[in-house]
Length: 497
Ligand SMILES: *Cc1c(COP(=O)(O)O)cnc(C)c1O
Image (cartoon, rainbow, N blue to C red; front, side, top):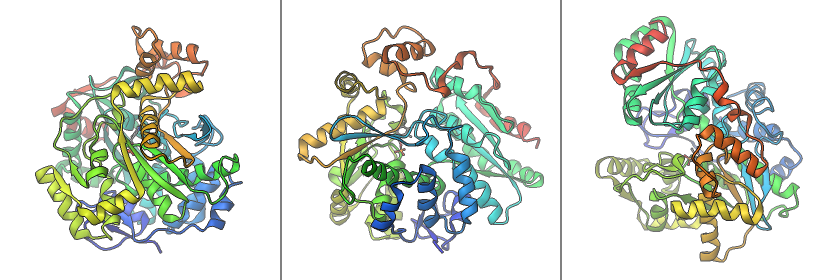
């Protein structure tokens, strides 16, 4: 049986169901599998003719081996289907030119890559609760700065045994993001605006999670809080699948010969997506390099170059907001592996990060890091320029996050001369961040975002994705706004406590 342990060494080893239910370990560490599931070349070859769903079932069963095949099958089929995704391939690989291929992870209901994990996590979670003998109903509480809230709402909407409450900063999300949330359908969903910024909203949610009165009343009612954030193993593991799937598709399309190594470029924020690629490589996928792309918040680029993680810098608001992050939580899992699973050193580095704002992994770990990762960054001007050039040269419209990756890939090729076939991991639809994309394409951007959606569609000939279409005319189902000191009362009332 695969067991999971904390990166900080506390507690006993537990099953995947237990790790998914708990989310974070009691000592503050992240759960990691005790070993990598090995996938043989024959097994990778067998993935080639399979559908995305079949590939997912195969890869997931190694890590979630306390789930029955039927349970896993049910989770996969409910998450990845054409009612939710706009491509039968779920995560298709598009061709940009002779050497660059684009893995489109934004064909899900919210048009960004978080759907790949958040469509399946609710099903894992419900089954994990039942398997571990929990009878309570799950209540998911989310504070969001935009993307995650909508993806979580879509994932949990009408999933039996769950309820979800999302708080967003009333004036801190884009018009499209807000509309996406307040029009959310489903009988178990609630959405509230908060008068305040994202920090206020997040602080409010954190306080409710540990509020004694709330917790006592929830217990009486048979309710239990859980979290859907990106450090949950149940969010990381489904992301491993698409690295294998992309490789299989590359072989299938004749882009590479079987066994040939490839590079992946990943626009990175919290380090979840790229870490899943690292896991795939350690499991046996033929990968040459993982290229880590950052925007102006280039903590990770500096870390890869120096071995020093230093968050002591100004936070920059950029045109690729989902990568505006100074603390990449999932990096903890990587340095745990690279340090030879040395929980003591990881705990020390995390304490230094908390107390001093930086830590140094030392030369040995730094060398290992450089064996597999290359880091680069793209400033905002370069990012917008890349959108323009890619459209002009290849007729492909990419979003700002993907453009960061493509610009960094160009820099990688210039610096290293490496011409290994490469897959660019594309994390959002260009329609999701349409205002910046329109600006990059020198379009008239004076209209509101809803008009720009249509204009972008007219200019590029691409249809507006279903998830963003007709947003302005959809009925608003959640129009309540509260002060930050009212959030607790709002939750109590919503749950009938
Ligand atoms: C969340 C997100 C990212 C960053 O992914 P991580 O797993 O946090 O590194 C990049 N692009 C988009 C569009 C995102 O929503």
